[in-house]
Length: 317
Image (cartoon, rainbow, N blue to C red):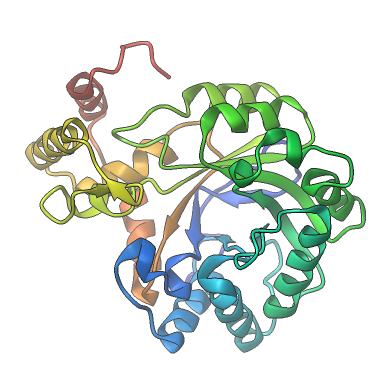
């Protein structure tokens, strides 16, 4: 069996945590058919979590809201089966609003972490994010007694070793980064082969010594299996321009003998500003397969060809 020492680790900003270039995403293993288009049976999800916790990757990302807690429950069962969280393993979860009432308050954040710790069978986590604050916006999130204040308290209390903010809109995340309240930031679907909109956010966070986590490099699947498999990107219908870009990148990858999925993963893992890249998996064997994608040899000139194909300026980082 491989160990977590098999992959080199990188510092997660100034947190003191060390992470492998890959993080296993726990959304699919909890079964989210509305997002991913398929169900994941409970035992398969648990076995996938076991593979993630015992393989060569040392980080797993989940959330209170994924499958209404089922992702955390399956990760918790996997932890029980292997005897607890491995030393040096960076498990992250997220504080979420109440999915039934929409409540997104400081009090709700307390209940969110209590629920998560119970499901996971832990009394603390290495990394804890505020999840999707776009539901209430920056101002309400930062209000006295609100979600961010409680998240900081949870770090101060030792319930989380480090804290981050995870969300979608880039401009909003940049506002949170500018507060210097967070140790890390997680962006998704916005730093990929076809979408570079998170560039300013990544620059801001890097300049502040924050850990940058990049998720959803497959854009929901299209950058893993190609435009013939789906017309959706980031969980919604893709524009004709984006579909055309995917098709052109597929052509370039095929000509270079490189799997599209490998290019999608390594676009992120090769970026020195990104500490770790989150890739969701739903089968045990996908963990090792993802590590293999990250290690494939890709010709240097393919990256410039891809940038040229989608109109990225030469000096874009």
